Length: 247
Image 1 (cartoon, one colour):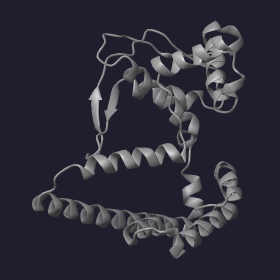
Image 2 (cartoon, rainbow, N blue to C red):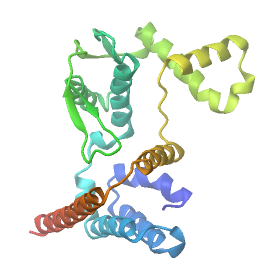
Image 3 (tube, one colour):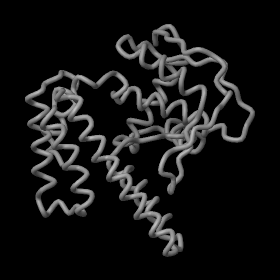
Image 4 (cartoon, one colour):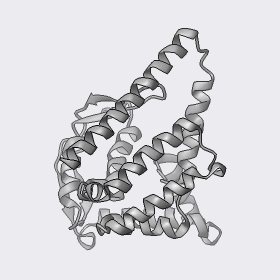
């Protein structure tokens, strides 16, 4: 939706509470979606436009409501906790020490998320409308913050992460031992990459899963009913938010 420049600007204006700049970016996104060459289905286009229209009319309300919980740091941190669970799925593993490198700006949000995440896990299946929450008892410790230069463990993780990151562009320059270590990590660990390509692959996988299901007329009717209910609820909540802001 955004030009390369717009993508670079988005997070900057969002975190700096730049209301005029944020509004300009939303208008740019509106123009892209309205372009017939963008190739969106009508319902998808309407969902995007409803959200963008609300943002253009009330950009300050959106920016006022953002917090540290909206940052990539928190999303990545949540993935770490989920990854630990996936890595030891089916094993009687208990986490008795959880150490994070120093994050002065984010530590309060990280601690709050950690206290929530360690109590339950989220299970999301392809056909679920909403994810299911399952209580867990696998984290038996608080979140501890340490400076990197005072923790050998954090330094080791930093080195491993650096190798993974550099492998995207410099794999051919790696020595034999470094290459062996990289492939061992990929075989025994969980590496999550946030990218447009990965998101598209996840959507494609879900689509292929759904396509293999033999749909009955009852299932199709139920799906249309749920779709219409979700659309009505979306419109209702947008209208409600407008009333609250304008009062």
